[in-house]
Amino acid sequence: MKLKSTLLVSALALSGAAFAQTAAPAAPAPDYTLSFNVGAVTDYRYRGISQSRKKAALQGGIDFAHSSGFYLGTWATTIKWVKDGGGNAGGEFDFYGGYKGTAGAIGYDFGILTYQYPDHSLAISPNTTEIYGAGTYGPVTLKYSHATTNLFGFADSKNSYYLDLSAFFDLGDGWSLTPHIGYQKVKNNSASSYTDYALTLGKDFGGGLSATAAIIGTDNDTYVGPGGKNLGNGTLVLGVKYAF
Image (cartoon, rainbow, N blue to C red; front, side):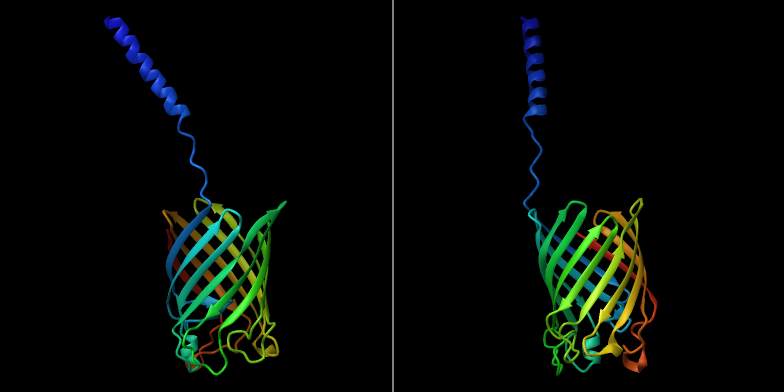
């Protein structure tokens, strides 16, 4: 009797182990993801030009991505340039949506992005909308953005464009290097058109925490802030971000 009991317990244990191995399939990948990020930079540079008068800025965003490739998102940051120009807006709010996918070895990304400056009170609205398309091959990405409105408060600047060439190199152990060069064409305002550059060293610490150190600048000295401060000259920008 004792032997039978022992054999029964052993059989149940073995069948339980087998059940545990076969009855718990991997959970299917979710149809969508929702992520958040918050961060800060020592200078908010956009396309090489300081938007925060070379001061620190706080930033954050929300992203929704569907397994089909469609995505939506919003991002916000503190700024100073609108107030420096006589307006009221102390923040920039971006809203975007698009579709990402692959065709063979090429990754592609198409979408629309609008930059909003609530209560700006400027004579010419800085609110800007662009459509964009990007292609990625290996580590290299080429992106084209086209303004369907006036560009950031420039009069008669509809159909301005920005061409962006960048690359991403994984250095291992969470380190990355991202070189970039871009060209901003301001329609009907050639003096404000320029080339910008950046070289960014990134570190992913895991757990959603990352940091960057970037050399950023432009070849244009017509973008100036209070006191004649050049907002597009070369500088080092440090940043930290937490994603969750």
